[in-house]
Image 1 (tube, helix red, strand yellow):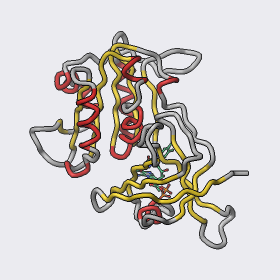
Image 2: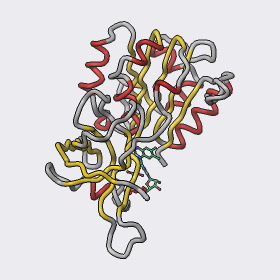
Image 3: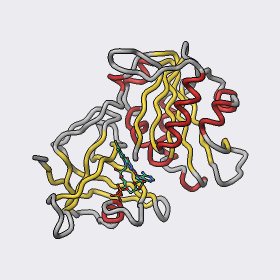
Image 4: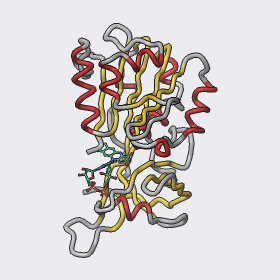
Length: 251
Ligand SMILES: Cc1cc2nc3c(=O)[nH]c(=O)nc-3n(C[C@H](O)[C@H](O)[C@H](O)COP(=O)(O)OP(=O)(O)OC[C@H]3O[C@@H](n4cnc5c(N)ncnc54)[C@H](O)[C@@H]3O)c2cc1C
């Protein structure tokens, strides 16, 4: 049976109409950067299960409390609108154990770590990049964040702090698909890998010899990027069969 622990909403930030971050105080819950929690609220009357839960990646690094989760509201979704409506002080439940293998201990070292995210899929990277592990395992780190509109490029301050803490070793590549803005890349991640724009923007190679890529977020991006990486001779990393990329899909 699932064992839930009760946490408390410690803070909330609304970035846009649909994008929210929720801070949750739940000191008993420990995790490795890149893992996800299961957040839950009491299920509607008549449900089979007493709690309605969904997975959400930790955005905070393990050494920083409270926990933080970044999510978008799916208006027809059963849980995300209810999470967005919570106010500080409200109870929210978490599965007692964190889960997932999208983390540094599971990833082999290489010269460059490419963190490729769409939308709220940037969350686990903001946790991972605020730990020492990636900076010990990789010489350079690229964070790629693809969104539809520039206003969806959240967490600018956290990204700037990561850049300042690792000057000369970190590059940020923002993508916007539905607006034209010369200060960011346009279009989609897989296309910009295929045509070389992403490597030109960062000045870093994305090859089987030099890189490990971590892909997180929208399943279409993950699938299409995977196909482009395979064309470059990169293979999915597995514990028993080391490879060049790791992935986490959100739906
Ligand atoms: C391992 C894992 C980690 C996750 N971490 C996060 C996270 O950190 N932040 C986050 O926003 N979501 C995350 N998700 C998705 C999240 O668990 C929920 O599915 C989402 O918040 C919607 O919940 P819901 O109950 O409102 O609707 P659901 O019934 O869960 O989803 C309704 C439909 O919305 C679509 N959908 C689901 N998630 C998203 C999304 N993030 N963006 C756009 N469309 C979506 C799918 O088509 C889905 O069938 C994660 C999923 C997995 C598997």
